[in-house]
Length: 147
Image 1: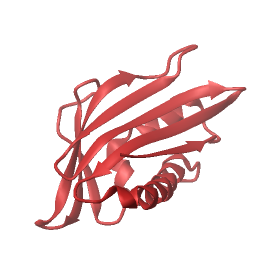
Image 2: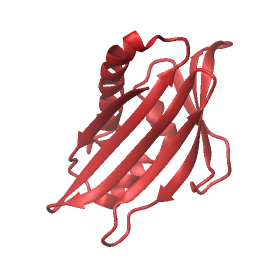
Image 3: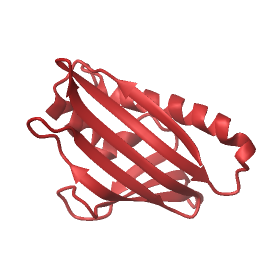
């Protein structure tokens, strides 16, 4: 498995950062050839299924994920969302944490992923690519001038 972490301190409150980080359709905005869909009726909760579809037409793959922990932030408690990846191509987990820290908001994206048929030799490259791709996505989601 390949593990990576992305951390940011946005100029947003905890509640707004959480809302943006859990706005699932917006997650694919900066990921080429990818779109997100929520397969279960709202609101988001434990058991919600989200699918990232990567590819063009029939040439592609689905990355289904199920939310197994859903704890929105509350007074004195950090927000935490853990998704288990359950696809044939991508397995592992991702976790989003949003918390107040020293008067600021801290957002952390943690992920541990395995890509089918990709040898462990590529774990370092996969981690670097994940950090870069998800770092750009998190930056976009948290931008105050986002359009």
